[in-house]
Length: 238
Image (cartoon, rainbow, N blue to C red; front, side):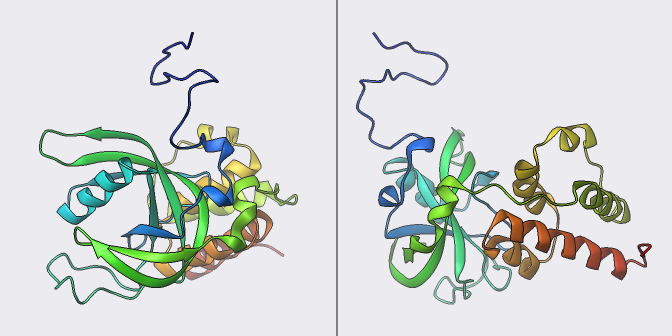
């Protein structure tokens, strides 16, 4: 007999309509997906992204995703979206986004949602497809990102230098951070969490998303932190 523990009502013999997070393969990912364009927002594979969803077309996107595989595509537009703009004049999108799976949600009485997305895999945006309910849809290709489903650990990097740079970056912006949580993170978890929480400009966030590997992402992140430090008058001894 299966046990009900929290939100888990399945035993190993219960058929599932969607695979478990750890069992997802490229074959489980769609060739077409509903898009949630978010300027200045980064979702990375294995990252967690909380969102408040209230605009009617994106409420529709969430409802459709919940009725299917619970997958949506997070992708950055080149410019910030004006809610008052004509929907026909949609902004251009970057070429690479990230598929997120809805792993928790709360439906409010006012027909809005609070959701959490877990990043699954990056995708390449190919072309727009016919939309529904006002939100955008696109044909996508995930074939280049098989490694996102079983990510190779990063090569060793200078963690001490990275955290020192991070502290300078946050202090220069007056941002408070729970350092005890960051200090306890494993290296690869840092390389997911830090790019998502740092308020880098949109193109820099895109560079972090498009870094081929965790090792490359660590290099890009360190470079961005160093560049931010030099722009704020900081200097490192050599």
